Image (cartoon, rainbow, N blue to C red; front, side, top):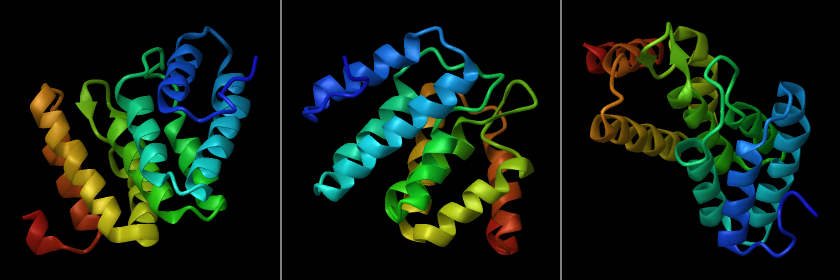
Length: 169
């Protein structure tokens, strides 16, 4: 049985992502081969004019698919890299932002710290408009669902790294 459905019906695709996220497999398999296969599936969706659906899969992977371990990197970071290499700059930019926003810094703090600055910087280089919109959406989501510890601190750090000192202060 293929990991991701050949026919890309959204419901089937989401079900496959959820099933894979819940499987107990080793880190190398989960973050390596399976992430690569998902990047190919998302690339096909983009090539077929379904970029909005591919973006929904990314958000689903981050927000709804349970089973990822906070002590290891979320697979969205590797997906971002794969999508970047495939030339899907808009989707890669969103994935890089999600890498930053899913990162846990020093235990209970949300959003990535300075160590995740390269991911956010790459997102801005690829597609500044979509990267900033994804960052705004994720910030609003964190505030809405209550996981906001460290959000302001890490956003101010990132904005200052961009060189927007007036905005950061």
